[in-house]
Image 1 (cartoon, rainbow, N blue to C red):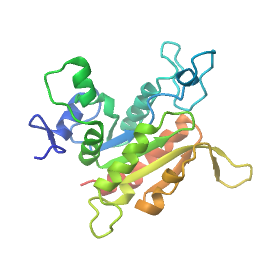
Image 2: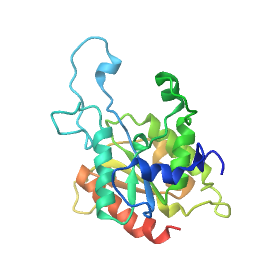
Image 3: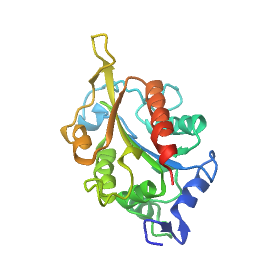
Length: 229
C-alpha cells in the first residue's frame, strides 16, 4: 500500500477507527473538515481587548476557550455518527501526527504532512464535508477543499476516482427576508463559491449548529450511504 493508504504498515482506515471512541469498524467513514479556531482580533492587534466574534461552532461551555471551535466540530461529527450508519470524524482525532507535531514533540515516527494527511483521510472515507463559517479561520479547510477534489480528479468526468455527490460544501448563512427557503451567505469566497462549477461539488447553507447537523445527516443518508463501496 502507498503512503496515502497506510501509515507505518497499518491501513489508514483501520487507524482512523482505532483512534475514535465511537462508531463501528464496519461503518463507512465521513471525513468532516472545518475551522478549528475563530478569527480572534487579538491575533491581529497588539493593543486592545476585543471580544470574539459569534460563530455557530463556538463552544457554549464555560470550561472551553470560545475560540477553540475544534471541540464543537468534534461534537458535530459525533452527532452525525449517532444519527446515521456511518462514522464521522475530524483530522485531529486520528492518531497520526503531522510533520510539524513530530518535530515539535520530538516523536520517533515519520508523521504525515498536513495535505497528505487530509488526502489520506479523504481516500479512506466514503464521504467528505467541508464547513465554512464567517468568523472561522478557514485557511486550512480552504487548502483541503482544493487538494482533495484535485486528488480525486473531479474535473475530469471520465477519470473521476469517486462520485462528486459524496462531497459537500456547507457555508454559514442567514435566512433571506422573503418567504422562500433561500439564504444570504455570511461566509463568502469566490474560489469556494465556484467549487460546484469547477468540481461539480454540491453546495449548501446552514444557519445554526443544529441546522448544520441536519444538513450533514441528510447528505450522508442521501448520497454517502447509498454510494459507499
